Structures are given as C-alpha cells and as structure tokens.
Image (cartoon, rainbow, N blue to C red; front, side):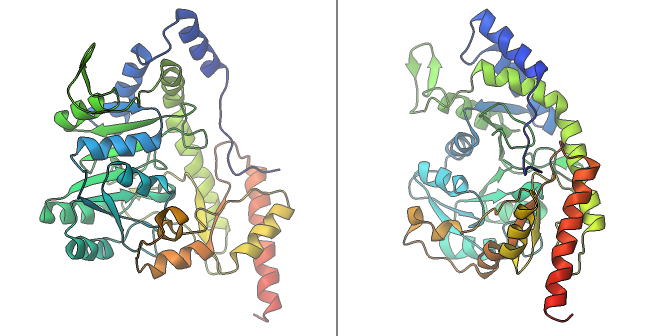
Amino acid sequence: MISLAAPDIGEPEFESVEDVIKEGRLVAGEEVEQFEASFAEYVGAEHGVATVNGTAALHTALEALGIGEGDSVVTTPFSFIATANAIRFANAEPVFADIDPETLNLDPDSAEAAVREHDADAILVVHLYGQPARMERFREIADAHDLALIEDAAQAHGATIDGEHVGTIGDAGCFSFYPTKNMTTGEGGIVVTDDEAVARRADQFINHGRTGSYTHATLGHNYRMTNIAGAIGLTQLQKLPYYVDQRRRNAQRLLEELDGDRLELPEPRPGTEHAYHQFTVQYPQRNALKLDLEERDIGTGVYYPTTIHRQGAYAGEEATTPVAERATDQVLSLPVHPGLTDEDITTIVEAVERHLTRAWEAIGE
C-alpha cells in the first residue's frame, strides 16, 4: 500500500521526549520557549507563540488582533472547517468569498468585493495544500481598507513568496503541527508575528489572560503547548528542510510525468515555492480515478468534498462560490510525502496514466 501520508517519528523524537519525562517538566517551559524561538527564526518572524493545536493558533491570532463580537472576517469556503470555526470562536462572523481556479486559494477580487459589501474587519487567507496565496494582493487590500490580515499556513511549512516565508506577510500567521503536516509535534500549533504587542496579547490569551502567577488581566484559554510537544517540535524542525525538499522533489516528478493536458496539475506560481503538503490534481471524473487508484493500493484523499458553508454547522450561511463548488467535485490528492521511493512514484504515475488512457479510449479520443 502506498499511503497518502507517513509521519516520520523516530529515535531522535523518542529520546527528546524521554529527556522531558525524566526531568519531570511536562507543561509549557524551556522546550516550548526554544521551539517558539526556533520556529520563528526558521520562517523569519520576530515572535512565536506555541499553542495546543492549529485551531487554537487561529483563534489566538484573531483575539490578539482584536477581532471579536460584531466583526466580520472574509475567508475561503474551501478549507478545513477549523478556519471558519476559529472566526466564530472569536465571536466574529465568517464571510465566504470564492476561490482562485488556479491556486484554489481565496480569490483576491472576490475577497475585496466581499470586504466592500460586508464592511469587513479582517481577511483570513489560507495557503491551501502548501500553495502560497496571492499575498501581494491581499496585503494591498488589507492596507487600503485598514483590515487585519491573518494567514492560515497550517499546510504550508516551508512555502515562500519571493523568498519570504508564508505566515510572515500578514499581521499574524498560524501553523499546525498535526501528525500528517509537513512537520509534527503530535498535536500543536503556533502563531508567528512581527508585532510585539500582538505576540504579548497572544501569549496572555493562551494562558488564561495571565500577567502574573495569579494575576489575570483579560479572559483567556488554556491553549499552551506542552514540553513534550515542544521537544518533538525541536527535533522535527531540524528535519523540516529535508522534508520540504523531498516533497518538492517528489512533486516535480509528478508534474513532469503526469499528463497535464488531461489533469489540472498543481504548478507553483512564478516567484513562489510550493510546500506540497498535498499534491492535489483536478479531474472531472475524480471519483472514478480515486476508486481505480485505491484498487491498486494507492492512497488518495479528497480535501475537501463539501464547502464550509454547506456544512450543517453553517446552516443558513449564504455565499455564491461557483469555483469552490466545482473544486469539491474535482480535487484529488495523490501521495507526495517524503517517505515515497522512486518506485512508488513510478507506480503512481503509471496507475494514473493507465486510468486516463482507458478513460479517453472509452469516449473515443
């Protein structure tokens, strides 16, 4: 079986966790502080605030930027539901704009129209699958309308735009360290920012609004990362450049060897480096291709089969998002993770091409 994801946890991680347990310092402490500083340095941000998971990081960033009751946040309907949930957790309201058919990320023109229509207070952009969104345009829109700009980079560790890491272009960026992400802490997340005041408010928010041992200036949550997670993160962060390079290497072979005339392939935009958390193609007969690959023991995934505003949790939300609706019917993620061998990639390519050839022969082309 060629799996869609293969988290790489080995002896270095075991040893780092064992050290923390032996020392008996399990809650947030030295390892977390080191991880915050190291990850912030990796992406080129001034500050990092580690959290218990990626959803908590998004919620924390919104709160730290002052987004709350009565505010509206323009975002994508084509993402994991946590993106929109975090907005609601902050007592704000998500406004769904359509997506760019090329990148499958939030479309800047659609987002700007939604900003004007709803007098929005913020934009929450997702770098879906590791493909950088058009941040140059979103920065212009945010500046022109005096909006907070948040980046959901949960799938984009290592992705860059003109050499600048995603997550550092907005007012705050959020990453997830779920096991299948480009690196993991088991569960975990982080908020990165260059704004010291935002970092300070985020740090207070994840620790019950604490300003002293038993002094609480504001309302907050217990969103702290543990030292065990921090220790795993420090080890994984050392491996991250290799992981990302391998993903790009694997993706390059898929881009070169798959038929781009019959599949819509995830080409990186000029000036960007895709992190390839997922290698997601678009294909009108997606379900048939998925079934064919799975019969050949090749793992696949559909991210995502339903737009967020069509979910029961968002019943009553209205949005006109035809590009996103089409994407839910056509996207299919193929294995691209660092654990793949050259033979695995050859197997994937041959299986996809076999399906495409049969499909085209069946319609007489």
